Amino acid sequence: MPDVDAFILLPLVFNGRAVGLIYADWRIGAAGTVEPSELSSMGMLRDYLMQALVKRK
Image (cartoon, rainbow, N blue to C red):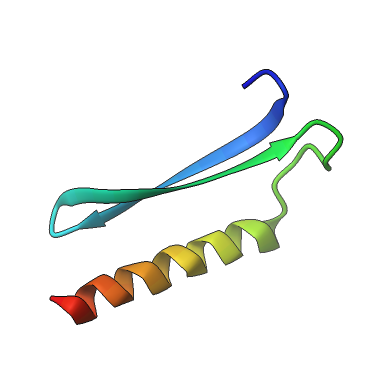
């Protein structure tokens, strides 16, 4: 990943088991930093996905 300035991996863990992963990256030319609002949005996405898994159980 030579052209990536920053990346984030958010694991999805359900009942103690890894069931998925959210990956996001920022390419060269972007701000070079992860904005708090972007991180918050990714956390909300993870929370929504986990809520959906809980409802399916």
